[in-house]
Amino acid sequence: MEENFIDNLLKKPIWVAFLISWLFYLVGLFLFSQMVWDAHTYQSDFTGNDFDSVLSGYRRVDMVRYALSPAWILVVAIVIWALLKFGLTISGTEIEAALLFKVILLGLLFISLPYWVKSVWFVLIKSGYTPDEIKHFFPGSIVPILDISEMSESKIKALSNINLYHLGFILFSAWALTKNSVLSYFKSFMLVLLTYGTCIALINFFCVFFLS
Image 1 (cartoon, rainbow, N blue to C red):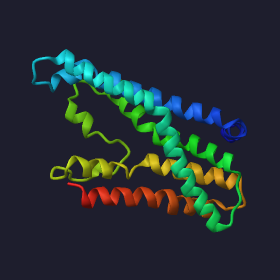
Image 2 (tube, rainbow, N blue to C red; image 1 turned 90 degrees about the vertical axis):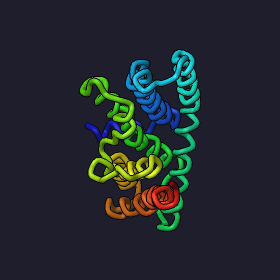
Image 3 (cartoon, one colour; image 1 turned 120 degrees about the vertical axis):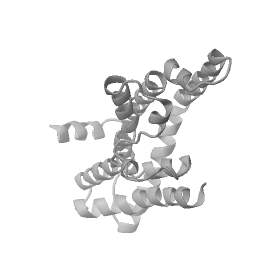
């Protein structure tokens, strides 16, 4: 049933996949920024005099993020499309450009999951949390098993990108490529891993070792 559902989505126009990916990201972002980072949470860490003004500033930033969210999804999808297209070209594998783009858009659902996971955790499960707990909560990543007490924020965030969500994207994309090309699952997995996965690894390697 799941395969038929995804196959049907991949047969629909690109805008359908984009709309699904964007709305999933936008709703998760909204829940996290409005319900986890609510007024009470901000106030618990506030030491100034005009909290309402500061909160208004935070909300304006949130609105900008919501407005830019479609562009964010498109830019990320285009970059990943270029990486996978390069890998497919090198391997001599043909796949329709629009179909590949739809695969990536649907795969981005995995990468957007952290906002949902964090929102569910802090809104429905955890209570009495602090801003620091939110900032250092990286479910599904390698951060919880590391000693981050001496690390900078930039390094912690970089390491948090080594997570199950990127792995989910790789596994899903490899599966979709296998379904729609002559590649075996192993070759599809290696192709996505060596293009998208390598790019993510290099970016975060730079952040860990060269950013303070």
